[in-house]
Image (tube, rainbow, N blue to C red; front, side, top):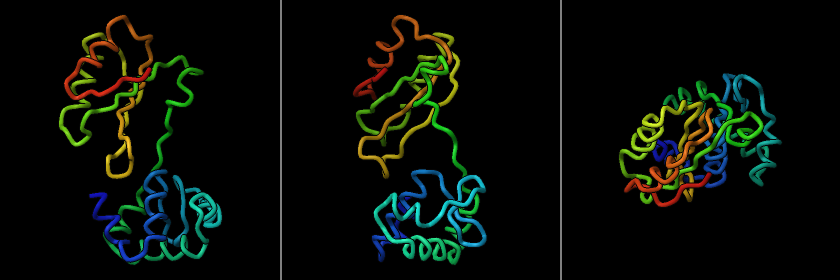
Length: 166
């Protein structure tokens, strides 16, 4: 699916960078062709500055998105969700980052969640970085309890896991 979106911009690497940035940040496009985040307009100049591009490229990308029904539906409905991992310590939460051996392998999330459930841990948030966008994809799990002894070792012992970071 992501490759289909990126493929739409194969003829314009600069617009492709804009689209990757939008997807990576959960930014959408509104009916007026403005970049937005959860309904709040983001200036094209701010997006351009963030990716080292020009405002006109951002505006052209937004127009192009609206012209294609496949992209239009996706970006009109895109929503951002807060990443609690950066504030977890302040909130009294624990963060477990799992680096897989092969991110395309099935069952990584389920195996890690099973370990946490076996220890009666409550998951506050879970997210994965998409292997098509991230050089080093990962699974991030945030729990609202301190990690009991053995949990990290059990996750680390899963056959799909390369590394666990706490």
